[in-house]
Length: 316
Image (cartoon, helix red, strand yellow):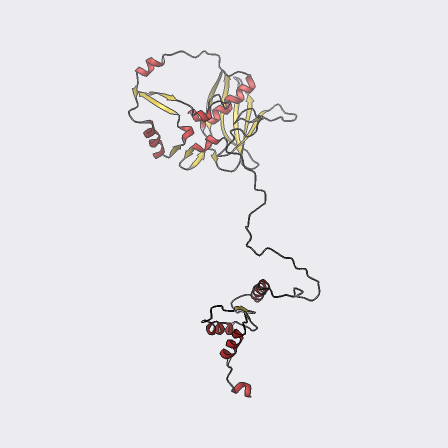
């Protein structure tokens, strides 16, 4: 009865504990109500003790107890980690400083953006190498590309999307024909693009299939970013037997009018239409124009010279 009738004197008792340099206060109870009162009582102290709850209705029981246990251990309190009393536990000393959180897992391999060739010994930057197929007379070549390899592809964009250039298909056909016929004087006919090839950081396989026909070979170019290949483009390739007619470049130039604007303005007009050409695809130096005809002076950037191409995709 006296316990109920007499005052608690919690504040006086708490101040007495603080005078004894008590630096940790752990409340054993269903919720940390007394800790909140203790913080108010000790508000005027320069160095307040560490207040730790054992349970809280707002958090999971184990989470509260383990957090308080970790702080007690950090303060140097010896902890009996044998919680269930059945199995012996071993403690390990861990660093007290924060982890740097640096990953050491191997990342998925990426094609190098600084290397124009996928492999050192391949036949051609886009055509790749010939596939040796067992028990088959098919002529196939395979390569691997992405928007950064070859590196100039990233400069050929529709809006912000990198798109494989049409001239790259033609160069692949010419390169395949040169490997097949061992000559460079070739003719391309009936060129068709079935779908655009959109590029990203993800590697894409390209395969070129040559099929003989009455006049030469049909060339089909496939792509795959998984297992299935889809037809991207096709063209006929023939040996060129007719000698090209010679013409006077100076006479043609005199019949045309010099393009009135700066070339930078011309590329800006293309950009306004969504055709965004980077530095690798800005080889036009001058333009002359007339009725149904035009003449251009095109120079390949020095960084793209001597890379094993017959018709470099960045030229057109």
